[in-house]
Structures are given as C-alpha cells and as structure tokens.
Image (cartoon, rainbow, N blue to C red):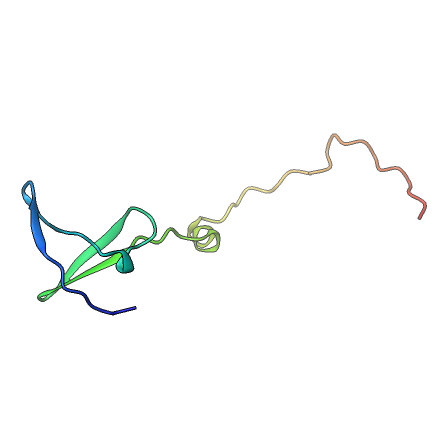
Length: 79
C-alpha cells in the first residue's frame, strides 16, 4: 500500500473538504483531526476496551450481599 497520494481539496458549503481514498479509509464513522504546523493529522476514534473502562471506574465501597441468601440448601451429591 502506498503511503501518500495526491488529492484535491474542494468546498462543501463553508468547509474545505477532501475525499479520503479507499486505501486510507478508517473503520467506523468518527475521527479526530489536529494541526501540527502545516500538517493535518487525522486519527480514528478508538472505543475503549472493557479493561480500560473498568480502570476508570471508582471502586465500590459497599459490601456485597450474601449471594446464597434465600436459596435452598444443596443436596448431597454422590460421585
């Protein structure tokens, strides 16, 4: 895959726009754009995974209830 390609800029209403060629497409429908000097950098928005989401949660200080409360006793099982 090539790392660069010539593209044309055009107007879309009051915005300047460009079409992203197929070989540069991102998955999803959102991206982050930032400027560094004369360079525009476009990055896909990555949804955080379960572990990073859990790391951001505050710890639970409440004690967990007895999970066996209200359940019938287990029968003896012969193996």
